Image (cartoon, rainbow, N blue to C red; front, top):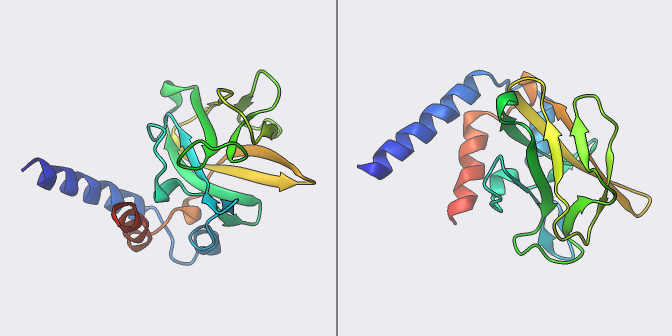
Length: 170
């Protein structure tokens, strides 16, 4: 019975998100293929928004801005602490801030990252509730992070959400 309730809850959330999505948006199509790997390791958004899980739903994917993923945030739960990392937090693929304080706010410039960090989590303060785009941007042998509020046309459709969640269970 518990599993049925969980399944129905997940389906309800997917339906809500799909209702806000657009099948015509090219941004969604660019988020889904081409997951980022460094040293043959998949890279994920890992933080308080997803209990630090390495989930395919939060895998970074090629985007015009670098490698990005989407996450739902609530402003009253700020700050959100996060990093980009592989599933084992390996050296060379564990991205935290390079220099303190490692804080991002809406409209702030990007923060430079250290791919060999240990405990240097970035803190993000969203101004409003919504879906946010988290991007890892490689530039001249350095890495940077940006976080911006996403538009409705960037949200994945229900079919895309189901496809992403299936790979979490395979």
